[in-house]
Image 1 (cartoon, helix red, strand yellow):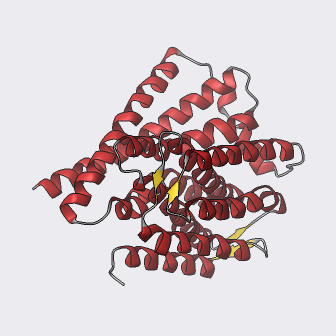
Image 2 (cartoon, rainbow, N blue to C red):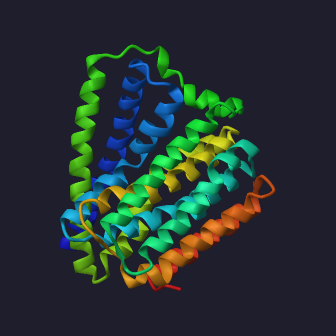
Length: 318
């Protein structure tokens, strides 16, 4: 009975966490634009942070509750899920994702670099506060880099997406209420997500990092899944792929860096032996897959196959 109870708590808490983060991001974006913050800055800061809030808050609470191994599991699992599952489904849905030079030029170098920086920092089995500082410096460099290339970024769809249509909307008191209420919901959603993971790992007898790298990673990647698939179906491949790249970069730098300031993060051996190599493999596969500036439907099926293999290996099914 306790298994069913905590499973239900986990599902509800995760859904509350993800949905609250969506409302928080929308409200913060409206307020940011109304305050005169440039749309591009809103896009690469408020929106990036908002879509990663589930990972950030749940990771901070995991550190405070003494289960810091959940942090790296969530980050690596989310990055793998974004590439293998979300990008794979997006390619299948659209039949072919056509990429632009500008998008690859802006995101790909830092995307690949962030993956290798993560590998180097966790290779010794511990993630220190000093390494957390390096990660936060990385996200600062990413923001600065994005702003430096913004003037030369010519793609119309990306510019349209960054400008948005909410600029014309008036800000009401309800927007502030939504911001506060969603922030509170994010905290409680993250709190019960972490609690339920701890309880479930004890009941089932598997490590919390395994649940974090698979189920939690999938749940917190739902916003990226919805955005990318919707963009792919609407014939906007640049947004679908850019959402995944930006999310992975932010996950690596911010979701590791911010919780790392609250204490050293333990890196389980299972992550080093299986999760990390698969994430590096996914990064390299993506790098070579995008060199011809397109991802075909068949490549999407291959990515999906890799995801099934990843899940099967984590749970010892395959």
